[in-house]
Image (cartoon, rainbow, N blue to C red; front, side, top):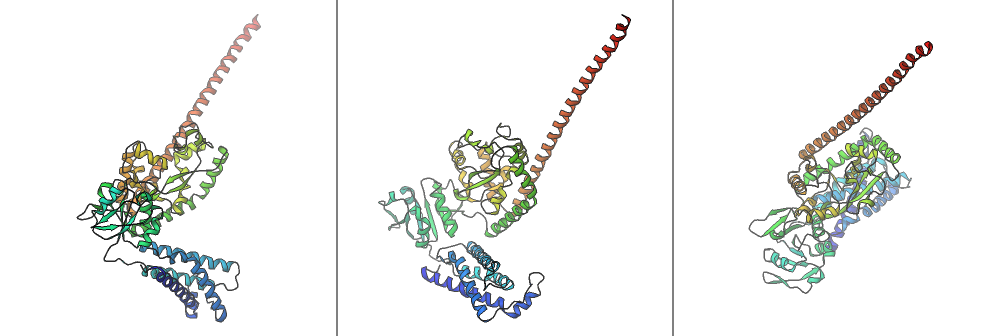
Length: 503
């Protein structure tokens, strides 16, 4: 990676030049006339600016694009795919801003055709440029030791072969002395600033040496390495909570921060967006009907929300349609999720029982998929308290390996019938999914889950029909009984009348 100010200047100037080229090229008359031939999109081209109008339009575009792309100018390591996708996202933000200026009738707004052409050009050229000036692999790998256990850190140092630039650890280790190949290893920062330490030391490898997989520190370090594209290793004696691959000829294991190839991630994300977006559009009338039904059935909010564990131990808020009475969680305690309680729970509302049986209460989680907190397929997200219980109460030592991928709306464990009551089976299926993940595997799981949902809906309809038939049968029998009794009374009265007459 180009160091410090050199990278900042290069990235800013390059972005400015590419923006000006995109605007000027898109404004050129031959380009405009060619674009005018494109059905629908090419109208109302040609719209060519000149002189002062063009100059002010270019300046306006420069200000908006540079402001939107400013986070890209920070000299920090990024993976190639992340750098490209983040750059494209910034281009879209900038172009939406320019379009907004046109909407508010800004005097020097870009014509619609020029804006579209410039956007198309920048979506290709700017990511390629940002990726090109990012860090290149170097022949000599520099390593950073990160941990909180002095004994484990020295064990890791004894197994490394590359130069170690220093270590990052809590202040309690400030007085400890470490050495690698006879050379002292000095403290370069704390765990709270691990992201800055990684950038400042410009390392290619992070060596993990923690006494335990603490959510905040251990997985916080893993997430920082994941975001910056840093290779991460761990000693085989401390690898119980991570996905690993062996490194030839040593005691260190490579941590699989990204178990899948980037192509698979792109396809998976595209599938997530397409699936969630399509289903939400199709179910819009259903969502509106459910919202009304929930509100009418019992007082309280339409949605129920709760914190769940995301990738690398982070948390996010998941939403469901409320299926229980309001404030039901206060009766169960902080560690019990009322929305996960059984359908026979007396606090479950009438509409709530139907929502749970048909899985329609899960529809709001499609929004979590769209924003990137969840995926369509993956390990089901659990409550943070339940994650701790799984490791302590059930002694599932590898439970946190599930955190290396986004949680899912459904997963292999769900279609195989494994629940939290059998955490070992659930973990086994979740890890199997992580290892086997592919687009076609995801598609098979989704199809099987939709089939199961369909069966549940059919079963519910049959139960409702049988219940209705049974109720009608009881009503009919009761009516027949009443009619028989009335008939008997009438006959008895008729029998008495002649005798009374005779008397």
